Length: 425
Ligand code: CA
Image (tube, rainbow, N blue to C red; front, side, top):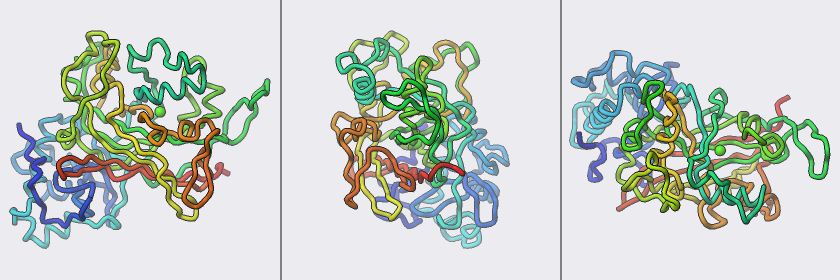
């Protein structure tokens, strides 16, 4: 089935600002609360939110096999479970209904009043119930930088790193949508030179510039997902800020990896951009040498050219872009991550979320964390208001944005924006 929704020549009758992340070619999926306090599944064109539950009730998805309440839910999990064929049919239909040449809904004021919302009439929610969350560590530049700082520049990568998409199981209960503030965490740290740990607020709170993909039910327990099929089970992607407390992390991470340093908060952008919508922006991933084991080998373009940037906005509202990176720098692809994740028979469910790991590029201005940008505090990052940062301060807001651009066509993810508040009292 072709992806008609991606047709770059298509225009919508909904006004779409120039350089919008959400032209009619995007059609992401999210969950929002409406002005009438109703939760529904929706999409977005330009700055207009579209209630898919209402559209379905009014018959706009006729002919597509969907249960009556598929969009009248507070998560996308059931819709994601319907599989790629259904996602594609629904996305194509939305694209038809909002095409500038289609007058059906365009001329129906009553229906438009029920279906369309301005962005200030809605409140975005977490789009999926995330049963399990896994975070990978798949940027070679990031792993090299961290390995150089914490261990040895000569042996920065662990011996397994070029053979395994390294990851750990994270905590899904503290994943939040953009706009929800978080508090500086408390924890144990070992001050420099000290022999015993102390307890108190983390002093080294950091962001991690990541993206995450969301899966559908992919396999039965015991059944690996072959790498050639892995992309069929990926619904879409979001921007992901994996908040990290570096001082807590440094003391706790041996030998089992991150624990409380990561589980206090992770934030995601609320609109899931489908893998289908990202098709035009496919690109190669870095050459893998040594060649991975056969179950991780693949041909062709399995990465995506997604421009990423991180802004720090101070309490007073002064904004500085501190990093510009790109998803295409990832050494391991999403299909390799998913194939590896399931090769032992681990079961993947609808709504599971897989973080990429911090996405650092090759140059110092493309690093994906303050740890690297300020190189462990030795090179403070200058902000536009004349202050500087080694890590994130109380009342700073971290904003991650991401978009694709090719042949004049842009689609994007919007942003994930999170304010760091002082310790909870
Ligand atoms: Ca991470």
